[in-house]
Amino acid sequence: MTQDFQFLKRLYNAFDPFRPLPAGDPAYVNCNSVRGDGDILVGVSREILMSK
Image (cartoon, rainbow, N blue to C red; front, side):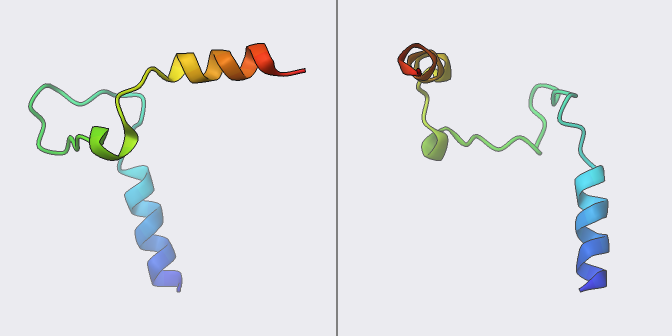
């Protein structure tokens, strides 16, 4: 368990979510097939407008 935690901790800290990947980087994974290509702002704005 401790070994798994240390691995996950190193993996988590290896990435910087605020640094975009350069064009053509092999680490890029296109997730549109599972995430969809809809505009998230439409859904969020609808939730805000319809909330109490």
